[in-house]
Amino acid sequence: MKLGRFHIYTCLDGFFRLDGGAMFGVVPRLLWQRTNPPDEKNRILLALGCLLIDTGQYRILIDTGVGEKGDEKFHQIYGINRSPCLKASLARYNLSPEDIDIVVNTHLHLDHAGGNTRLEEGKLVPAFHKAEYFIHEGEWKEALSPNERTKASYLTENFLPLKDSGRLRLVREDALEIIKGVSLIRTGGHTPFHQCVRLESEGQTALFLADLVPTTSHIPLPYIMGYDLFPLDTLQKKKELLGKAQEDGWLIIFQHDPLVRAGYLKKTGDKIELAEKVSL
Ligand SMILES: [Zn+2]
Image 1 (spheres, rainbow, N blue to C red):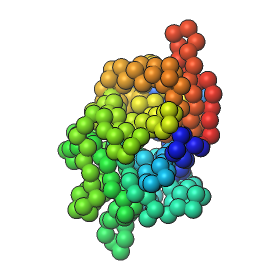
Image 2: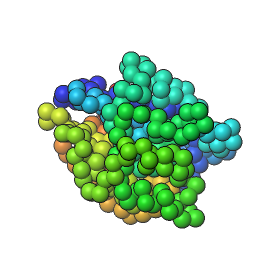
Image 3: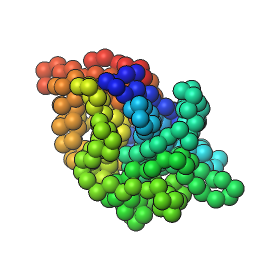
Image 4: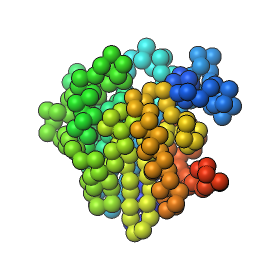
C-alpha cells in the first residue's frame, strides 16, 4: 500500500497463542470469547506482525517476530506456527534480510525482538546484518535487568548480541524522527518505554500501534492487556492516540490481530470504533 511517497507492507512471522484472560485484563471471558475463540488451553490466536516501510531511500523493518531460535517446548507453550516466517514474508516482496537498512524494536519482548538475531555456526549474530537497530535506551535497560514479573518476556539472546555488533542505536527521546517521516513515539504502558511508530508522507499519516492496541478487539478503552505494567498509562495513551487517529483520519496498523492488518476509525457517540478494514 502507498502512504504518500512511502510503500508500506505488513510482514508476518507466523502466528502464536497467548492466554485469552491475560490478553484482555479485567474484561471477562464472556465478552471477548465470541470474537476471539479460545482453544482448549484458553489461548487465543494472534499474529506475529511486523511492518516493512520502503521510503524510496531506506527499507525499515518494525519488529522481527518470534524468530527461529526457540526449541520445541518454546513452540508448544506459545502455540507458535511460523508459516509464513518473516524471511518468507520478505521474500514475497523480493527482499532478503540484507536488504533491510533499519530495524526498529517497539520493545524487546520475545514476540517482537525474537528475529533480531540468529545462530550462525554456533554464534549469535544480527539477523539483519547490514541494518542499524533502533531500540529505546530505557527498554534496553529494563530488558537487561528484569524483575520476577518481567523476566520471562525478555530473552537476552534476542538483543544482547547487538551490543558488540556496532549496529545498536539506543534512543533517549520520547519522540524521535529517525528518518524524515518515520517517528518513534514512546507510549509506556505495556512496558515503561514501549514505542509506537508514526509514519507521515505527503499529508498522509499511519500509526503502527504495537502493543498499545494489539488487536481490533482492544480498541474499546477498557480492553487493556493484563500483561501491561502500567495499565493506566496505556489507557491515557489510547485515549490520546486513538482520538487523534480518528480525528485526523490516520491509518492504524495492528500488530497482533489474526485477521485485520489495518484500518480507519470512526466515532459513534463518544465511542471510537473501527470504520473500515484495510489490507496491506
Ligand atoms: Zn506483543
